[in-house]
Length: 261
Image 1: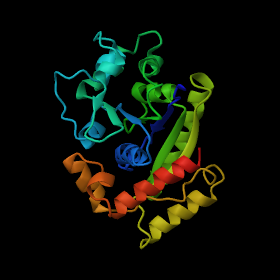
Image 2: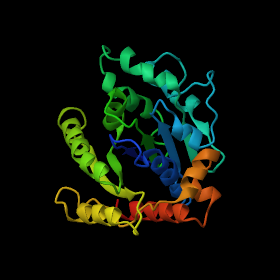
Image 3: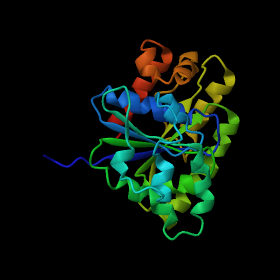
Image 4: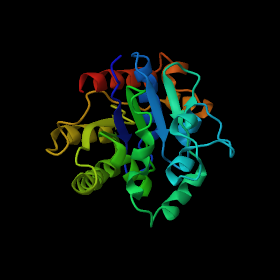
């Protein structure tokens, strides 16, 4: 049997509120509908991806904090939670993860802790999708060190568009100093509303900017209340509101993602 080589994808944007966690959860779920085996790694102390996959945050649960801080002897596979949906697994997060920033600051090889953790299980999955905090931090750097590629959700709003430059500069620095194989594999417009001039303007800018135009997905995530509702009940929108714009859009993104590899 051939060994699987997981594609390790960071979902990242230094600006909050762009739909980053919704992208991590729902892209992962949509990929399982394409027959793929997917692991979500929640690297955000706010642990919204964990909640969004219906996993209750329990103080006694071994989570990603224990693995990267090496405070628990458990192996990585012992930390993986099976979700309710076939082919979709999770390494959960916890608010304690915020303390890892301080605890690891003087540790040798601190930027490679997540990479070491994932090396134990990366041959089990087709895709490993990592959610990141909405800021540049040691946690984000750990994700970039472990990842093969970055998918960037970009809200179709001027502030989000302007923030792309800083993110691309950060990724460029990481490729020079930590992970030379890291690349941006796509920019996915989110919160798109074709009725508004602002949304249409940002889409046009993404498609004409020399730095971004070849990376922009044709698929967009439209503004859709079903996405927020699904997050609230801890169930990906592609499973709970299958005919909603949100579900259709994430399935389209997953399909385009598979075609673009």
